[in-house]
Length: 425
Image (cartoon, rainbow, N blue to C red; front, side, top):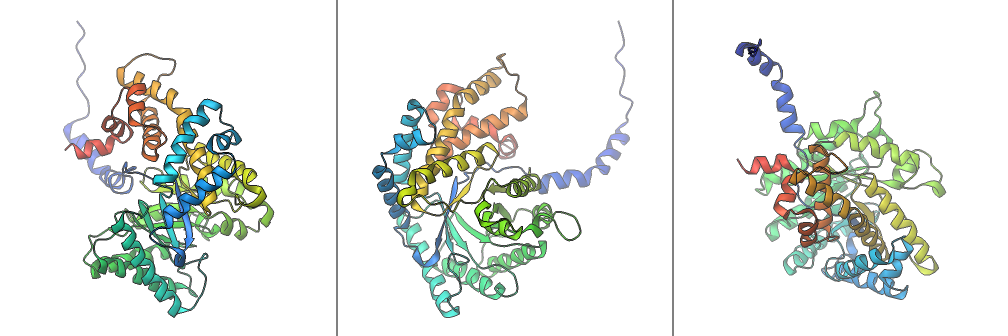
């Protein structure tokens, strides 16, 4: 009988390798924690801050329903977006229910481009009023799950104004009681790493002043300038952001029109699907891969109003689907009439993909041979896809149980095994 060889590397050798890789282990643990498994909204709605009221989300839902009904209903909308009759029917009922119960998932009260410069006195008053209205909406249960503000950028002309609006908004919320669980702050028009570090300093100080836990005030970074994609030294500043303020940035949002205009793209051709947009968004994907920072695509300014409703729906639905296929699971909506096409396209994406994804998951979990041999990384992607469908309301947990044979807790563990492992310790 052949004698099994003994390992040649000694315990001292292995210990030396551990020492050599200690910094790598720390980097992966701290800077690449992966997605945390919580819900990501499918969209962000932008509205001038002074237009927000506690009934705002319900009002937009009612407007969206009225528009859909005036143009033949949700099944016709599904047909416009290329859905067959069975899929359109399944999507229609869910979209209608969504618009009645949760028409807006994420709402940003805008003090930047959507608000403009109205003078300090007016903006101070509007900021305090907005914070109080948000607190009232949260208490009444009428606020979207995610809500916050976009303030003016940190370039010299608007820096003081942006910081004051941020301060007044957070301070007013803190004085009213516990901050909204889904509070989101958005830093626009970022050009340098230093601006993000300044934002980190500002929110850290606000946490200290108001007795908030360290890291409570996370923020989004809007990628709207070419300088953030390619810096003056030839490196990519956006790739540095997750590592200069680890754990602080919640998402990167692509800004369609500011970015396109910065590259002198003619207004007629500025679009979420222009090649310059695709390049920037691919860099963003690479920059945050594994960090847990999420991504959002931008918006289309072609609005479904007047005689252009159906054409605008077709465009919007196609762009939403395009983003989803490219791994951008969130985008911006600017008008109530964009909600039907947002949810119809999103729900169709998940419902169309559910049967195949669920079957492959079942085979993986049951160790059954099928036409595709999926590795653990692919199983994670399959589970994450199905989980996103559940979280946004496109599919039900009972459907997942029937098709994939897994319950929600198991689905979550499959999608985020590192999270499941850490919580089981």
